[in-house]
Length: 338
Image (cartoon, rainbow, N blue to C red; front, top):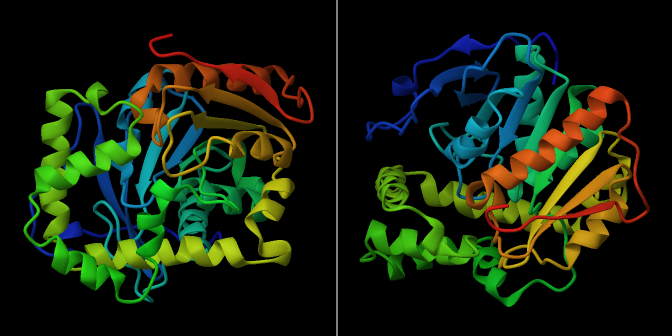
């Protein structure tokens, strides 16, 4: 976590198996950054003009920096955005020590921010990335200007039934069993399953978007560490849920100083919609965006609505008026296409 760790160019071909290239949307760039013990792939989108504040986007379990492409495009006139592939995901190779805990992922984000000198940033996180961003914000408040969490993976006492299969990946042997049982599944079948789980309405995915997702799934399945990264990261989430004391995620949420935008979807099958109010109480300076029709990845389903809510937060911060509206946070409700 030292600020003396400097990024260095590291060609992805030197650290990854030879698989098909990662998709890069028009206007985006990919680069590889070498840091002690990890190599991170960073996706960026040139800002509309110079001098915009920096932002960093952190994806969820099984995701990648591509999950933020639509929102980054929406916000290109507001922030200088970068999205990171966490170690073992997207185009980033596994960490040298094989550690996929929430703390290890947070350490990777902190190392990158320290090395790049971009902090404080507007930090975004989804699902697993939301837990990671919460930890980063709690332990290094100097690196975070605002925090935006989309369906953050914070501990729940009553886990939704639809989330149980994902949690089971954390158990020893389950990944091996699952890969054996699903060996004959096509990439298209797998993508349809993911969309049904993560989207409030999978029909919102365009034919082109579906083809791109299938292509990315085919690429990931060629990576020898793909399922190991999934299983170990799922275990990292479960282990983080059991931590007590100052390392407990809800305790760390209470320590976050940055103005926070919370985004929850009413059709989320992985993070309970009922957790929205608890989160609004835990984060001391929070606003709650409730999207009844959204699932687990609101920034992909309704990027325009999420972008508008962030702009409102940004305007308040820049005007110096970002004070908590109430103990439950300021409630906002977005609608499809609004």
